[in-house]
Image 1 (cartoon, rainbow, N blue to C red):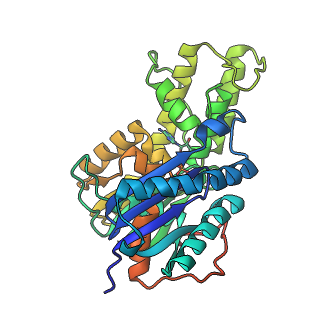
Image 2: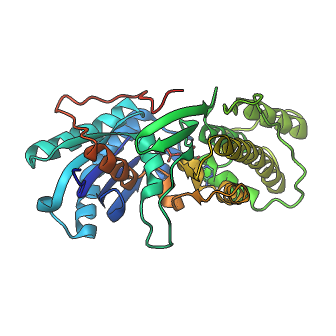
Length: 353
Ligand code: KG4
Ligand code: ZN
């Protein structure tokens, strides 16, 4: 078997410019992320053109910082990996063209990586800050990000069977949209988590879309529910963006009620799927996996069902280069190589049913 060695990984699919140096898909030598969050917060969301230009502005400084942090050089690198999709076309192209140039100039193989596979393989990264065992197969993984929400079964490396996915909004998208309705800053996920922690009355109940016995999800009804509740409590007066429609305490209660609904459905379905698959471990990944209530409740429910939960630390759940380096190691070992004609694949899928 070819051993991956040290891979330089580039991630620019959305609004984080990430470059990492990862050894054998497990040991992180450097993981630098330049976040555009503050920049997009003013617009209340991502503006694709602005995101692509920011990647261009930051990608070289991010690479310089990664080299400096790792203390290695090109002679130590086996391959260059890059996210080919899914994501924003303009953002993906910046990383792809950058990685192609590096691979060509330094005569290294180029390894294309699926961003969603990166979120999954973040669970295989070693973590100096805590003792984290590798997930055991078969594993059932829940990936919850701003653009995707799905459950997959993995019987071995790089083998996926799609168990269920969202039929409308992704979980992160629901956090972002409801956050905006509540007048919270972008992105809604961390803002709702923070607001919810201040809830005292615990009296807001959001609906749950169970969709029968399926492992599919639906979150778009939560926006409508939030809009109705806010209208009922404010007498239907509109508010402008960034302005809280309700007193702070009420925003906290609503944040908690909303978060509780999303977490309840995600945890219940994931554990049910894991039990049905005879899984030996549960994996959690994607930006929403940075949510501490989701992490804690899924860990507890999985433990009760006799399975460990493997979830990366929050900084490795949101977009970063290290997760791409983790997935790239497996892809490299399996012989995946791209030519200089590699193109962005904005709607690249990960798995089929
Ligand atoms: O994976 P990610 O960084 O980018 C995508 O690939 O989409 O995920 C971003 C999403 C956003 O919707 C953001 O609101 C959500 O992850 N998110 C959270 C938290 N941190 C980030 N959602 C809930 N709680 C959090 N703490
Ligand atoms: Zn992502």
